[in-house]
Length: 198
Image (cartoon, rainbow, N blue to C red; front, side):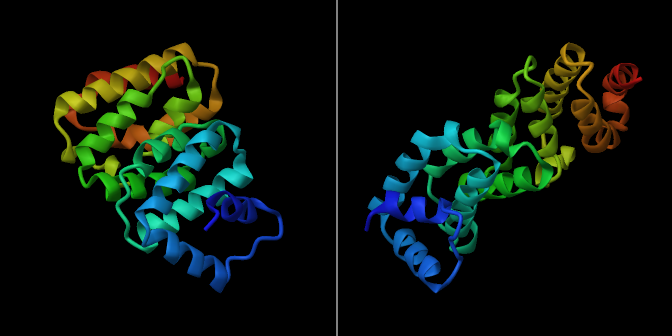
């Protein structure tokens, strides 16, 4: 099977998600060599995708990982990298990435640690995506050690300070974070966030 031809067909404007698509995905899902070829191909193209074709590639991965329940470790860094691209900056897209990352890793804490590593305070988009990730099981802060939450809050706070004129980031903080840090343990951070949001 020619993996590149399959991916290019899916990326084409006239592609249909029909029985042939599902049959091909079944075949790929059952063959480790094809899964690795797919991972390698997508990895080379991560930075050239846009909203439209990035979403189509994410659908391929989702159909393999979630629909066909295939834990493909090679997909994990690719999904994480795709999630933090500009074209993936929306809540529903991020939720689907998180769903796959948690399924592959089977350790929600490791996934949350990786999310924290990907926050680049100078880049508002990375902070927004990390906030969108809270609209998932990662948003249950009681699942994590307090020190991990504090590390996350510090990075988001730093990004908000640097990008304080970025309305999209402010909206993400208000919608995704503020209600989660009402706990007395995070009152200091809550007050700092509120000052920056005014």
